[in-house]
Image 1: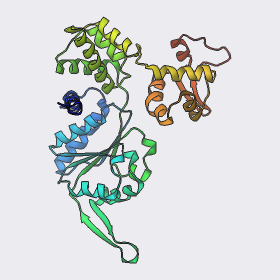
Image 2 (image 1 turned 135 degrees about the horizontal axis):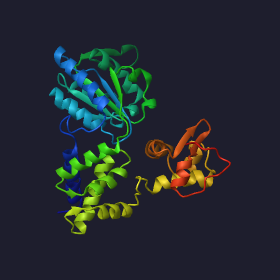
Image 3 (image 1 turned 90 degrees about the vertical axis):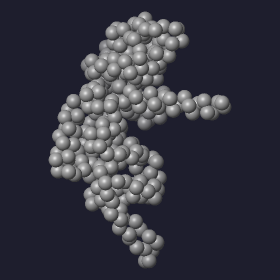
Length: 338
């Protein structure tokens, strides 16, 4: 067997494991109670009217369960789901091929929908409102518009950057839901369920340590659990203990609050290079050799959730909590932001 085929098999195995850990019913989906209740009403009402649910938009950080919700909605409605992403829709033909192959009642899921090309958006509007696809044939004075009727479907969009979604597209969704960071208790329940599915024996204290390092995000919690499982197997241990979990996370350079090397480097840059701030995003990106989008999407949301960073009109500032956590002296000249 070639190296390429081995890697392909490994990737398929990992994808199968991730799919197994995905909630299979509403009871398995922990957290986001308000969102689940509202979705339940929308789905039940659509069933009673014998119609497709309205178009839905989910937004929130990566790994908070947007895709899992889409699968649960499709399962509840008993329909098939077609999955694509904003960057994958490069040409109008790409969108037309997907729309014309939908069946009545299908769900079309567009991940990263804020990255859909603006030209393609124009073709989405009549498809979402009137279930029609307008295709322009030819150019110039001889151009003609061909109208195709589409089956009734539900478009579900997911985005991590709601502000980048154009207002015309955003306003065509019947309901918009924000997914928030999870409570530690809920993360613990998710880890317990995942450990059971993976056939792992794990101590309660080990679950707590992994949950505290999960950045309040289910996907990260499951990823850390699988990495700790790797350490347990290498060390020939049948049970994930507190000591093993702590050793594994330390080896991965993840501290007790889930901060990684990049998070600490960002905080230290604000404190040491910019005297605690305020500092603009562009300057901060240049000082840390990070892309601005990486700071906005990966580092900043969690650091703000912990209260380590505060955004002001002048820029980002490190809070007193950040100084204390990094064991640095809080400057007397700087007023507390906590």
